[in-house]
Length: 429
Ligand SMILES: *Cc1c(COP(=O)(O)O)cnc(C)c1O
Image 1 (tube, rainbow, N blue to C red):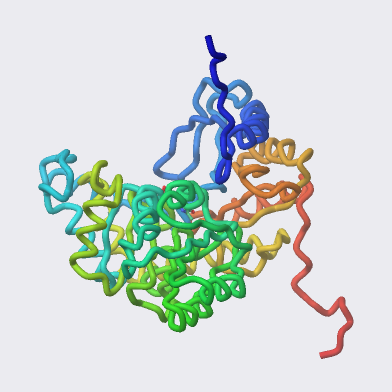
Image 2: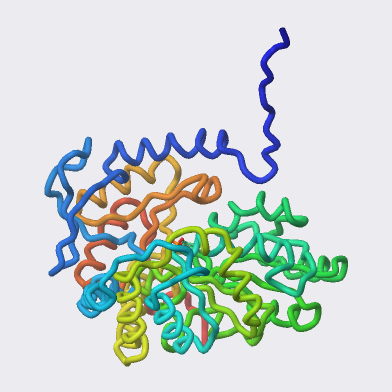
């Protein structure tokens, strides 16, 4: 008898042993200290969360304000968004009509795609999640079917969100895949000279501030036909006129060499995602619909999500969106005037308050006891040695809540912001 074989994995693009081995301990620690595994009821009037029974350390009924929620404009609880969901359910009379859209579909999602297409001035295809869209689209880009028919070298930015990085092994079965340093334009240009076609995959707006160099990339697109796949989930609605996001606001390459995906689940305030395209032929759109993996074989947005999406799109068309964006920016400014972070003075709503790996959990614990939730982040969510408390600002947070949070943050070890008056430096003007 031969010995049973053991398997040696390639681990070229992923390694669960490493990921879980290092990450899980920290999750256990977070949960043990009442900073993960929380179940809490949402109070519609105040937006305050109330912990349910069942957590090992967080007492039942403990109230806290969520400072770690990506619904930056609080549209997810907007009365018109809620009403839109209910109305659409009644209007279409069915929650979902389970069959691949390429065969038969009810017009619900088409209606949302038309509305978003008008909002973005683009061709829009919806999906149930940005992750689902990415998992469907990147392999089509790898094989050249979403592109000009030529297989591109695929460059994944080192910091590309996990929803994109996870698709590397699939793309690598269709073409060559490499990982670049963060926004390394020289490397990208070098590859553009060496390869027939290149596709670059990155975030439009980074979760810890910073934006993709869309103008410089557009030049490479123009010069070499570079295709860029942006995930601009973090800036949709929070940034730009009518909330069209960072990439769409600044990118001059509104053509078939730019593909942008955005979740509708963050500042947009509903469910699902939008694939934002320009200049794609009907034939290519059909290929996306038929061969974009889960875009075809999995569920579509249900009618409640579509109704919520239509209502949010209407809000995006009014001055209310600008009012909400301004409230968000005002709250970010107030935070920056009280606590210093590397992100201070940026327009992006996320702040990372640096802490050491050993103090981050204890600090988070102190803050939730004071009535605020901020999430501790750590390797492998972020790089080693860059642990901290992730704070997310929203339009709906009150001045008092922000002041109170910042007070506890400073007590827990955050660096207070420098006083506003720069006179102390003594530098003559
Ligand atoms: C949050 C986020 C996602 C996840 O979006 P889903 O629609 O929930 O899949 C994907 N990409 C980026 C960059 C994100 O920030």
